[in-house]
Image 1 (cartoon, rainbow, N blue to C red):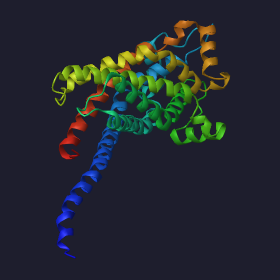
Image 2 (cartoon, rainbow, N blue to C red):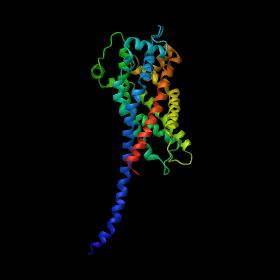
Image 3 (cartoon, one colour):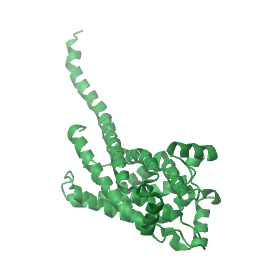
Image 4 (cartoon, rainbow, N blue to C red):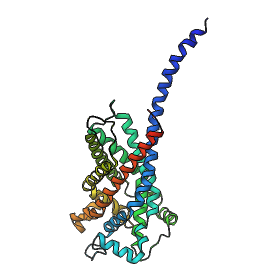
Amino acid sequence: MDKSNTNFVSPFIDRDCHKMAAAPAHGYAKTLKGILAGGITGGLEICITFPTEYVKTQLQLDERAGVEKRFKGPIDCVKVTVKEHGIRGLYRGLNVLLYGSIPKSAVRFGAFEEFKKNIVDETGVLKPQQRMLCGLGAGVCEAILAVTPMETVKVKFIHDQSSAHPHYRGFAHGIKCIVHENGLRGVYQGLTPTIIKQGSNQAIRFFVMETMKDWYRGEDKSARVPTLVTGLFGAIAGAASVFGNTPIDVIKTRMQGLEASKYKNMFDCAVQIFKLEGPKAFYKGTVPRLSRVCLDVAITFMIYDNFMHLFNQIWKTD
């Protein structure tokens, strides 16, 4: 038998096999780029926006029904905090959020890229319902893998500072106390409302963001959207998510506070808030949350898009 025939055929087989192997490898590379860019983005963004998150959480925890509230509003909260704890007081709990923001953002964008990779059409464009579905999936993933434990610890830290005798001495001590007193379930309080919140958050944000970027690009879907325009679209997407799900954010915060044990579940929490504080309580902290989220989402998408553009220049996957 002439072995040259096998040599003649093998190059075609090898090329086909290489293409088959390269396709999933390229897909994984795109997801990995999303994870890396997302992680870097999360760390930078939270260092910039944390004080507004601190103020929002303090206002949502200020629930003294029938008693004069401790804070008159966002500005008063800042004044009281700085007076009692100095400027550093506005950054209490930053380390907790920083530890969580990097994996949170990495999971969010990595999951979105993974979902997008599997359902995008041949032109690289997502249909409106697909944008929302990918965002929803990304939000659910980050809620389970990163946001719930991070948010629970953060809320407990901030709530602890407002008590007469703060208990937690630092991040490690706080985690140790929470796990010792409540077990691992202690860092997963409010999981259901967090899934609902993050799922709706990212469904709204990615839907608005992708839709506006698609509109801006027009016929050329490969065109790059300028950084400042991306920031503007991000701010709009952030505002849409705030008005869409602040009530669930309030419920989530209450269920993760130090007094979470008084609520049977998220529905009981909602009923108690409504009965004791009225419907307006579901929009507590809207102003600081709006300022934080608009800035947050604008900065996040600007940083993420620039890192993805850089990665795409030096790390070819197509």
